[in-house]
Length: 210
Image (cartoon, rainbow, N blue to C red; front, side, top):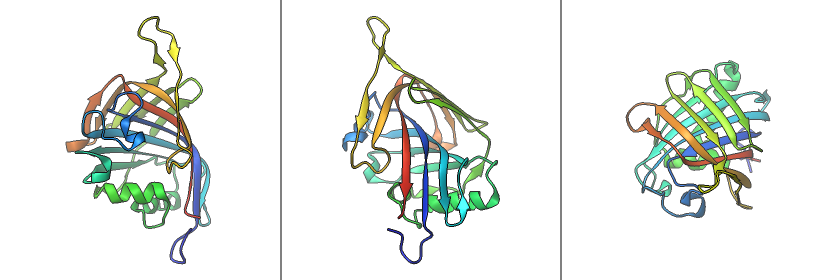
């Protein structure tokens, strides 16, 4: 629950995450990443929400992240991107949320395990997603792009549908599993990476500090 020093907020919408783990992503089950380290990209399309008296409906933001080991070991690096269509008030609100100081498990956890976080940058986020079909395309000029599709059967090419349900999850309660067809990130240093045919999740989110 928000403390007296915090602004009451809530945001809800659609999220797609792509990372370098194998399909299923061991991190979803408190296990080490497939490769022993994590490189990922997450994009969020806020459909409804507010930060105090500021509406956050229609805001888009994304983050490129990298950890040298398990996420709980921290030492992560991240770049936060906010779509410049957001007003100055909306930009300020999202930037504050990412500090974790306004509460909410998602933002508090990521702030704690990503000590190497630069100030947000503002670039157009071209994002299209169809959760039912497990398809998504993302492009952030000069920063990153990725596409996802359904996991397919290696024998006959038919679509293989799977979901992960986390009733007590802080990020999502249920997510569709997809395939990251290809991802390229150009965030600089630890945030420069490429991979293909790896984990993707497509889900709704509903976060609050209330």
